[in-house]
Image 1 (cartoon, one colour):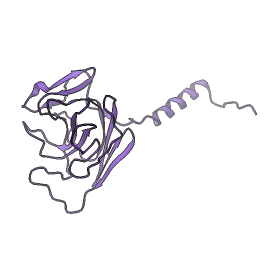
Image 2 (cartoon, helix red, strand yellow):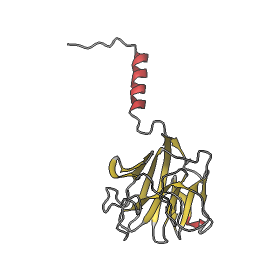
Image 3 (cartoon, helix red, strand yellow):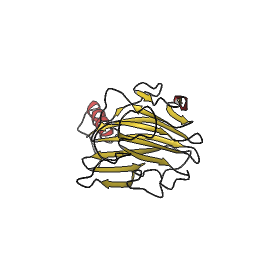
Image 4 (tube, helix red, strand yellow):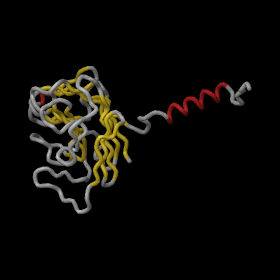
Length: 210
């Protein structure tokens, strides 16, 4: 049986565009990076030379320094965050959420989602650091992956290229820790430069509020 469309060519194009939009996994996300500059981002005051731009990505290579999102869209509470990440061999990094800018040191506020494929630390990419740690990861060195962090109410989910690697529900009555809060709240994002031997690239940072 021959099928004949009842829609005009213009209508068919509109339907096709609509379907493509519905299938877009980044629909509703807003970019936090322009791929050309550090606009909206501020490094800690220590070791600022650690950070550079390379082919549209933030490149971390040097002594410890954290790069904080300080743009107008912060703070964030419930959200989906996607970051494209690539590590060199034996590199360590991290993506923080519910954090706050600080001049130096390891971020005290919020949580770190680990970035580590082959570094000596056994807590691998996708771990909610020191809360729910994973020993293996689908991420690979020298290949881009998308780290997808979903925070909704008391739950946190981390996906790597669409594969769920970690789920956490914060127990009722959880109190902030003394040295590192690790308590769901609200705040900004931060990227980690961990040590001089690590090389980590972060790009296409986008977020959607929930």
